[in-house]
Length: 249
Image (cartoon, rainbow, N blue to C red; front, top):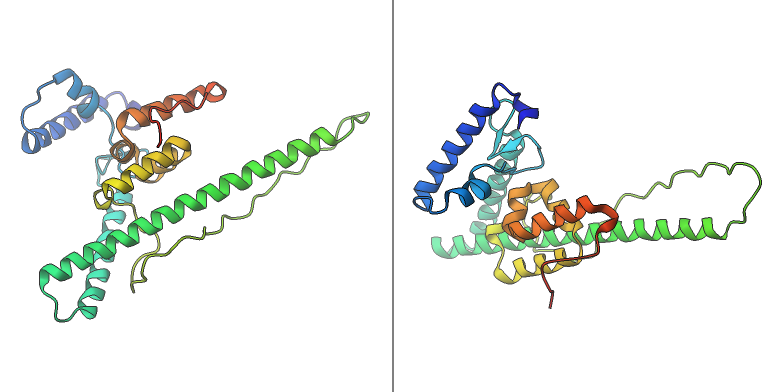
């Protein structure tokens, strides 16, 4: 925090954060039963809601203003919801309001889930190509005989841009933004478990989620303890032995 607001303003920014979160706690969940645990898990940590490192509860730490990236994400979601609702209204002119609302929520959920899995598959292909390229370079270097004199510099390998993975697309809806965000509240229990199973095998999924949606969102989807474990293992570098707190089925 000091790096964003300076030593002089950091205490006040932290006090404002605690006051804001305590007010939310009292309004939504009641009095704090474990003050120390609440401070460590809720009151003190920065809750980054997007990829901007300055973001804290959709506010910028250095200026106190609303986070523009979070505002843009919210605007995109509202635009998409309006577009889907309009398409549902056109397709179901005689349906009741409850039926149209249910159809809209179902369509939104299908769009979000399909695009999220497509992005995950795309990253899988990118990492597979990177690993294959590194392996090919290692084999070529091992097969090359030693020569006198300094070796010629090896030109860097430029990886092609990732191609969209083959995935079953969700039904097309006019006016829906292709860069749809993942909405955790729209995921079913089975889909959350699928995300966690994939993350247990590939910790990069957690890092990608943090970079796009923020650490707080990753903690909600993958649990706080698993995110902390992934971050700790990432800091160990070559000592990462593949430990994961889950045992996928």
